[in-house]
Length: 198
Length: 198
DNA sequence: GACAAAACCGGACAACCGGTCTGTTTTGCA
DNA sequence: TGCAAAACAGACCGGTTGTCCGGTTTTGTC
Image (cartoon, rainbow over all chains, first blue to last red; front, side):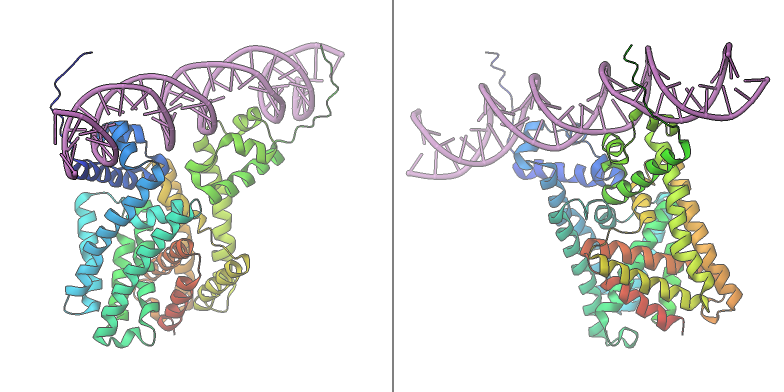
C-alpha cells in the first residue's frame, strides 16, 4: 500500500558495529542482566528486527562483545602497552598509572569490563565463562611472555604465575575501586608492584 | 467461614533468618539481578506476604544480606583467622590455603560474595555501594591492624596500603578462579604473598 | 531484468518480574 | 478478657523482558 520510497541502504557491518558499541557501553554501565535490549535498540538507533538478525539472542550479543570489544580493550590497554614499554615491569606500572589517571580524570570508576562480565556470568553460562577465561589467558600470557623475554628475575621460576598475580591485583583493585569510587586500591597495588619488580 | 484450625506459630526471627539464608545463597549463585523473589519465596518456604513484611523491597533484602551475612562471612573467614594466627602474615596465607582447599574439595568456584555484589551493584545503587565499601574497609582494617601490631616490616610504611594489596589480590584471584573454575590464580597469589612477607 | 538470499522493519507475544493489596491469624499487653 | 499491633497469607497487577514472526526492501548473481 503506502509505497513510501524509503532511501534505505543496507549496511550490515556498520549496523553490527553500532549495536556492538552500544551493547558494550550498556553492559559496562549496568551489567548484562541490567541491560535492556529494548533500550539498546533505542540507543543504537536500530530496529528490533535488525538486532535479532545480527544477534538472535542476548547471549550471542554478549559473546560478540567479549570477543570483539572487551578483547580489543585488553589488547589496547594492556598487551600493547606491556609489549612496547622499555621493559615488562615498566609496562605493567604504566598501565596502572594510566588507569589511575584516566579514572581520576573521569571522576568515576565503572570497573574492569572483563571482570564485570566474569563475575556476573561465569556461573550462569558455560560458553560465556569459556570466552571470559580465554581473554584472561591471553592477557596473562602476554605479560608472561614479555617478562620471560626480559629475563625478569622477579618472575622466576614461573612467569605465568607472576602474570597471574599481576592480573589478579589489577582486577581486584578495580573491583575495590568501583565499590569505593576511589583509586586508592590501584595506587597501593602499583606501589607494591614497583617494590616487587625492582 | 472455612475455619481451618491452622497450627501456625509466629516466628519472626526464624523466618527472617530463613529468608536471609536463602537470599544469600541465591545472590551468590545467580547474582542480585538473576535472583527471583518468587523463587526465593518458594525455596525459603515462606509466603510473599511474610517476605514483604520483613523486607519491603529487594534492595532492603540485599542490604540485610550484606550487613548480616556477607559481613559475617568476612569476619569468619578472614578477620578471625588473621587475628588468631601466630602472625598476620601466617594468617593471610592460611586464609588463601583454606580457601583453595575448600574450593578444590567442592569442585566449583562461585566467587567472593562481597566481590560479586560489589561489581554488580556499585554503579546501580549508592546505598548498596556504601554498604559494600564499608565491608571492604572493615576487612582491610582488620588486616592492617594485625600487621601493625606485629610490627611487620614488609607492611611499612603504610599497613593499610599493604592490606589493600592483600584484599585486591584475594578478590581478583577469586574472580579469575570463578571464570576459569580453577584455583591456580589463588595459588599464584599465595605463593607471591609468601615471598613478599618473608 | 528475474530471482533468491540477505538485510531490515516493526509490532506482537508469552513469561516473568518486583511490588501491592486485602484479609486473616497470632501475640504482647493493659 | 479485650484489643491494637505485629506477623503472616496468598492472590493479583502493571510493567518490562527477551524473543519471535510475517512482510518489505535491498543487494548480489546469472
